[in-house]
Length: 412
RNA sequence: CGGGAGAUGGCAGAGCGGUUGAAUGCACUGGUCUUGAAAACCAGCGAGGGUCAUACCUCCGGGAGUUCGAAUCUCCCUCUCCCGGCCA
Image 1 (tube, rainbow, N blue to C red):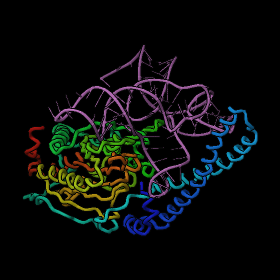
Image 2: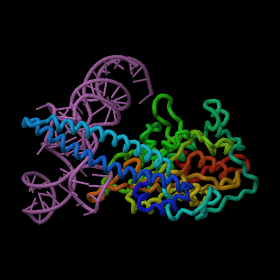
Image 3: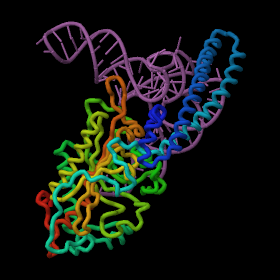
Image 4: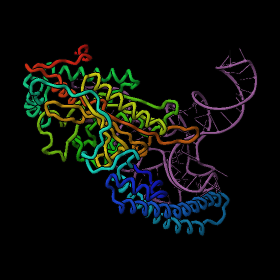
């Protein structure tokens, strides 16, 4: 959630920055107005409450001493009506405030370039040259080695589900294990968490209330399938105050991810690029504010090095304001080269949400005497399915066979 | 799915409807003592808002009610635990 105080104190700057994310100034203005009104009403209410409290205490004393209570009682009753009235006003304002605030995305970091959509993202670095082929490389959905079975996925569930078989299934498992081990060596502690979470958890990381349509909900249960491990892993620390000396906390987690892909109709309908269920190894960090930039870079390097170790050509891309996700202040995507498709495609996305999620999820740390909000970061180590097909396309031979990258051989 | 119990500060655990934001113990922090540590002793120690700082307000799972006054009484919801059934 947005820091309302920032909005009150430095309205113009916040407006300017949020323009990058297409937030209307009127909305922010409304939010500010309500917040100030709320503050004012609350002060009046609190004064009334203070008076009421003091008199109620007196009442007890008078009653014990046998003094006259009748007039005091009348006074209290009268005052009570006023308190109740004001209280409902304050409550209404509070509800209005949170409902608007919940719709406002995080403030982009100053380093985020302006831009409308993914076409305005900025390439920062190219790593490894794309492999060259002396034949025309196929796209993964045209490869006929029996690893991927799209029809079976449809039979079992519906479109955008895929069944794996033989070495395809095995490679998928190898990738998961390899990545977890790789991340562990980089200081990320492995965790394992539920794939089903409640509403509070999804609110903590910002998927709810705004993006309910993108989630698979369990009928009649108020529970949802997780769209990414970021959700449960970050929320491990929801409502907690962490000891300063425990930070930064760096975690890695394998999970299945479930997304409705609402609004993606017609995009990437072929192959295994965009699925309703996919495997992913995730990185999540919780840091002090002054550590988050360093850990962010650390996470980007970790994912990039992972790709390098797999021999996959890729590039780092800095997302522009318009392409930035709801909770992110800053995001770097890693895009891997797909020779069959002849283009780079996202395989990892690493974001610093600063204190945006921490404010919602109430994740704090003790800074001496004071409790302060932490920074939370998340990023794919790599999406397993996309890594699998990246290997298929990059390591394909003319005879249709696929070479296994050296580092994975021990895991097969 | 059937039967029972419960939800209070980091944990454990008190709390006749009125100076209880909450006893006590543990943990934690600071100090004394010690070459150092432990022990002992002294002190501090929930969260959010508000303020320059106080004051002050809110919070004892969540919501509604009774009352001048609710952690304490009533109702609803949620969750947890135990017993039984089912089961990886």
